[in-house]
Image 1 (cartoon, rainbow, N blue to C red):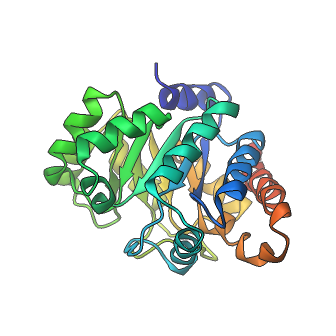
Image 2 (cartoon, rainbow, N blue to C red):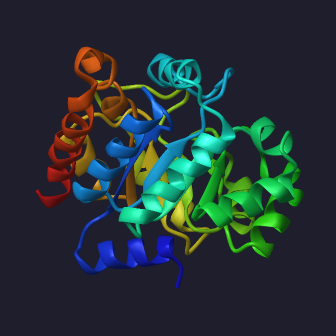
Length: 266
């Protein structure tokens, strides 16, 4: 059983959903990013989703666009991203999923990128803009190197397409709870219970939900329905608010994750 499967099994045994925080690698710089990951692990995160900085992140809202911009301005490279994962491996056995765009994979050579990710300690790759029909090379390379491929199911995905996505995916399926880009929202969308049930009717893979989750109450609501809860912007927003005191950013994010995870215990 791989690290991702173990994380979901452990959460199920505790009667709760997995908590999956998102941060962008190298935001606001490499050293702070390492300490942020350390604090998220210490706070009890189940799976760590690390964004690969990209100059054209089409699926991301302003918060994560600015995070990528800060990371790139601080000198982020592929080397930095894989080094960050390697540093995470020094202090935790937490599953790591890269959140990326296919140009960043393809430009390095798909097979070479997947091998490098595996060697660094990555457990899965979530490629935002790659549909399963076009993902043959990535899926093949990932199987060869025992990496999981996570695919997205949107609110607009028709029922007859869900089995195709589920059969191509591994590790877990990522349900985007709303149309549009990433970002904090004041309220959860309606119909989430039906949407998760619709997906689960076609697969045994765990289903996680992300996009727009920003409070312990949101975490509670989603955690009661899904196998995992992804929170990104509500965590990432703490970084620009505290750039004048970067040494405190990891502690602030750790407290934020503990606050959000309290929703899983209610």
